Image 1: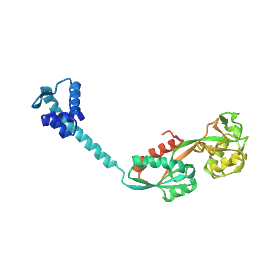
Image 2: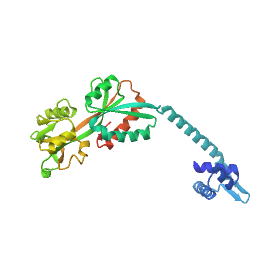
Image 3: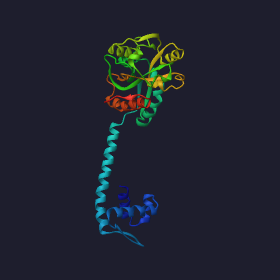
Image 4: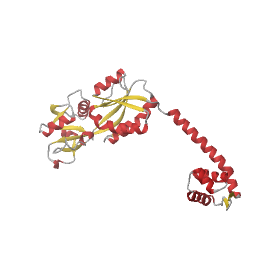
Length: 299
């Protein structure tokens, strides 16, 4: 299209130098594009002389089609621009509640994507626990939420999943994985009942006919890792905590298998939240979670 437009400008101006000035383009560059267009069409398009250039028979034929081509492309560009304006999101503030265990690492990733993809959106981030986030959704105090447990009466969906790992102060030669059944024979430091991770682990243990030996209940992955470092027992943490090299120094991290454990991460939406905006935000949230070390769920 660029060469077609250059060709038309030369035909209108009647000389290469005049067209180059009109296009604000160096004449050698313009001559190169004309030569390429002639090579691609297989025809000489201009007769050159000291007085300027004149269209050849092939040039006159291309000139007729060039008008139609440029007009149609202009129409297409205008239509696409109109569609872009039609679907452009108005400037607005979006409130997102994020569970505390993910917030610190997730916020800069999400902010970067929203700034680039949705420049009219201003984020208001609320850091809270899953139970508080559920209440915020129910009361309409947040537009979107990233949290760990499904809430009755709230529109939500699994958006990602986080692999779980067993962390202990044991021998690093014990292997890279540990079976779920083997964890039932270990003293564990876990969150208290009611915590989404604890609820998930207890439900998984019951499903497999197991009972965990919980020697200490501590909410918060960093505090649990401190307890493990002090020799109180092993613990189970998500993939995001495994990336904390400082907290894991001198500890052994093993993937849980038989089965591999993943806890779901949910996206909650306020009732009557703009569905168009929700559809625009959803992939940005998913991409941010994946960049943070989680895995996207299958659609």
